[in-house]
Length: 70
Image (cartoon, rainbow, N blue to C red; front, side, top):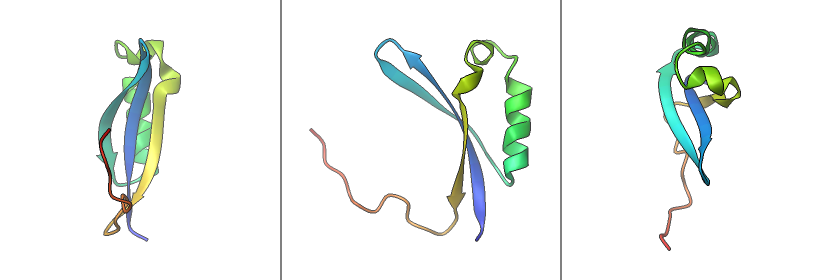
């Protein structure tokens, strides 16, 4: 399986989540190294629990159910 690793940061902003895609990395270790580099930066330092690393398989549809708006 070929995959990349997405690094996200999420924090609560009033009544909703504020999600930031920080970067896309070749390895999980690279993504974790980015967390270490960014953890002391403004905003991130106050919400270190907001970092999340997700693995995404390449050449695969990840959103397959379609969508609708309300």
